[in-house]
Image 1 (cartoon, rainbow, N blue to C red):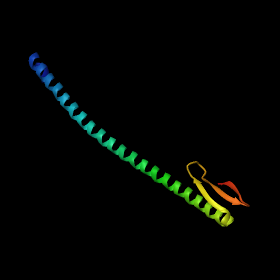
Image 2 (spheres, helix red, strand yellow; image 1 turned 90 degrees about the vertical axis):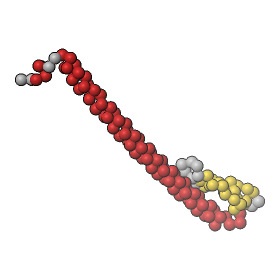
Image 3 (tube, rainbow, N blue to C red; image 1 turned 180 degrees about the vertical axis):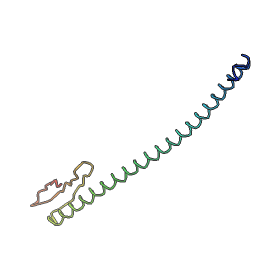
Image 4 (cartoon, helix red, strand yellow; image 1 turned 135 degrees about the vertical axis):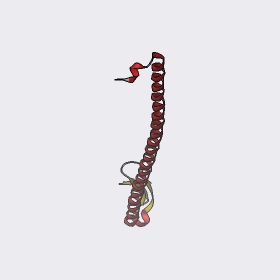
Length: 116
């Protein structure tokens, strides 16, 4: 036998209201916990983005440094090859393939040579 059936309607309404209130309180706690979890997830995502961006910056700096060293080696080879005839060199590393433009004075004429 169910004892709730024996209670009058007024008391049943009160009990039902209390049950609804409990459900509302439970949902409030659940939302609060969900907000906390979302904050933590956002913080983790920001840290991951920061680490990724830092890695990308380090990689780009490494690649740029490698291109610079390659161009410096090219300049050294040009100086060794032409000696006193070599006036100066300009280094270009912004593009995909780094290159240099060397200015050479040969037989009293100025030449520009692109070396990559």
